[in-house]
Every structure is written in structure tokens, then in C-alpha cells.
Amino acid sequence: MESLLRWERVCRVATAGPGGMPHVVPVCHVVTDGKIYFASGRDGRKVLNLRANARIALTVDLYTEQWSGLKGVMVQGKPRLIERGPAFRRIRRLLYAKYPQYPDEAALEESDSVVVEVTPARVFTWGLEP
Image (cartoon, rainbow, N blue to C red):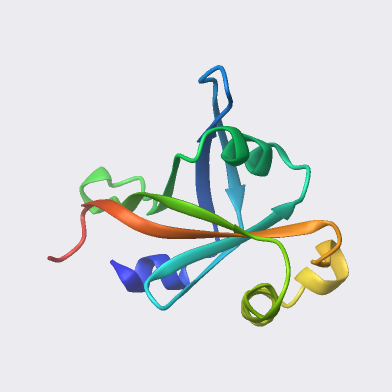
């Protein structure tokens, strides 16, 4: 399960706004120390939702036309917003290492970006070896 989370390139993140409306978007993510991290603009919908409603779920999956081979993991967890400092810079380095295009396409600056840390609380898998 951790290898799927670690190596897949796209993670889908679900948050909900103050009125409960779901918001699901793909993000670039990294996994380290048992936690999942991704970045967003400081005023991005994900961040605004998390400030109002600290609930988050994310999914990483592998699709195949042969449905018996579908694999995935869904995590419900506790989010923490990291807005600056050594933790922000460490995760930025990890994101830049996994996604080399990140610095040129969507540079992460402490002045306008936020790193979201997700500590898993519940994990659901399908198609993966126990």
C-alpha cells in the first residue's frame, strides 16, 4: 500500500467547504515518515476548505480495463497546514525531486503557498496484497 502511495504520480484529494459541498481535485504528492504531503496556493479552494472544515480524504489508484486488476488506496486523515519554515522547505525539496517540472511550472514560495500534511487515521485498500 505504501509503495502505491509513494510511487504513483497523481493523488485525488477531497475536502468539503463550510456548507458541506465536496471538492475533489488531483494533486502532486509525496509520502515520507508515514504521512502524505501536497502543496496548494494559500488561497486555493482546498486550503480554504481545510481552514473551515478540517476533514480530508485522498485516493491513489491504478486503473485497468480488466476490473479484476483494479488497485487503490483511500486515506481519511487529519490535515495540518504548513505555511513556512524548515518543514515547508523540506517537503518542497521532496516535491521538486519527485516532480522536476514543479519549480518551473508551479514554484512553491512560502509567501503564497501552503504544504498540507495528512496524517492517516483510516486506510481502505482494494486489489492490494495484505
